[in-house]
Image 1 (cartoon, rainbow, N blue to C red):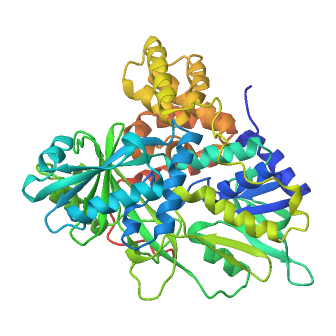
Image 2 (cartoon, rainbow, N blue to C red):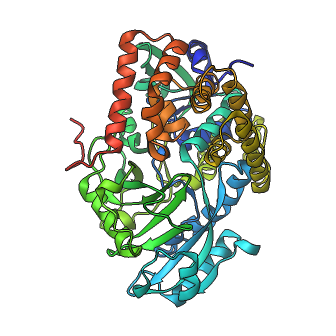
Length: 556
C-alpha cells in the first residue's frame, strides 16, 4: 500500500469529512491528551474528529523529559494518588508499545545536604514500588557509596553518600502521541493538523453547536458540527476558553521546562541519573543514542506560547547543576549540541511556587457545553481520556450504545512487538539487514527500532529503491513514509516530531536538508514560495535549538 488514511495526501478528504458529518465528539488540540481522548472515544464507538492548529504533539507533548514515569518527587508533596496512578500506567503503556516505551533504570545519588537522606530515600523508594506495583528485578535497591560510584564513576566522590536504584521508562513523547493519533485514525477518527479553531457557533439557548476553523494550508474556512466538544489545548486552554466567552474560577499557571543536549562523549553517563540541584530541585541526565540530555527547569512563564526561548540563565542553571554533580566534565555553553523548552499547563494555586504546583489534571465545564481539560502528565494520558469520556457520556442520552474503554489492551503499533525482548531481537535482525545495505553503524538499527518499531521494515524496503548512498537513501525513505503514513506536512514535522533529529541528531539536518527539501517539495507540489517559507521555518527552529537568548519572547 503506497499511502494510508493518515497521510497529508488525503488532506482534502479529511476536510470534506469534517464539513459533511456531525460527530459525536469534536476535540481541540492534538497533543497527547487530545489524541488520547480521540483514541479512547473512537475505540468505544463514538464518531470523532480532532483539529490541531500546529502539528500533532508540537506543544508540550514534544517538550517533556521524555519519560513515562511515576513521579518520585510527587511523594514529597504527598500526591499519593498521582504517584499510584502514574506508576501503574507506565507499565500498561510499556506493554502497548514496548519498542517506544523502554525500561530505564534510574540512579538517585545521595549527597551531603541533598534533597533525600538515606533513611527517607529507602522508605520513599519502597513506597514508590508499592504504589506502582513494581515487582521482581525492577524493585528498588539501595547502594552504598562504592556501589553507587561503580554504577556511575562520573559522580563527584567528595559529596557522595550512596544511592538508590529504581525503575522508570523512557520514551519519545512526540512519537507516542503520533502513534496514538495514527491508531485513532485507523479506527475511524478524522484528525487534521494545521487547522485552527477561530470561533464557536451557538444555538438559541447559547449552547455550543459548531466550530469555525481555518485550514492553515489552504487558508480556507472549515465548519465542524458535533454533539459534544472537548478542548485539550494544553497551554492554550485559557485562550480557547476566552473564545467561549466563559468566566472561570480557575486559570492556568504555565511553567517553563528546559532541556540541554550534549554529545555523549561530553557527558558519558553510564545510565540515567536523577540528581540534586543546589536550590532543592532535582534534574535528570539521560543517555539516548548519540547524546545525553539533561533537564529540567521549572519557572513561571508569561511569554509567547508559540515560540519559547531557552535563555542564558536557563542554560547556566542546568550547566551549574551538571558541573557540581559530575566531576571532571566541566561543561559550558559551547558544549551544548541542542536544546528544547516546553510549557506545563498547570492549574494555578495561590501562594505556591512553580515546583509546588500539582501535576494533577482537572476538567472544567462551560455553560455552553465546552469541556476543557488541563494539567496532568504524559504518563497519565489514558486515565485523563477516561475522565473526559466519563463527563461526555454523562451528557449523552444514549450512552449505553458505547463500549467501556478498551485502551488498556489496544496495542498502538502494528505489527506489534510484544515485549522488550522482542524489540531487541527485531533490532538485531535489522542490524544485519542494514549492514548488508551498507549501513554498519549500530546506531541506525537502534534508532529505527526505537522510533518506528517493526514499521521500519517498510522504510528499509523503500530505502533500497533510491539511487543514493545508504544514509541518504534511508532518511529519504523516512520522509516518504512520513508523508504517506504519518501526516508530515512541513519540514519541521519531519525533522522535529517524526524523527527527533533536531534534538538528538541535529548535524544530520544540515547534511540532508537539501535532498529532503527536494523530495518533500515534489511529494506535496510546493511552489517556490511555499518551499522558501518551509525552509525559513526550519531555519528558525534550528536557530532556537542552538541559541541562548537574554530573555523570553514576549509574543508581541
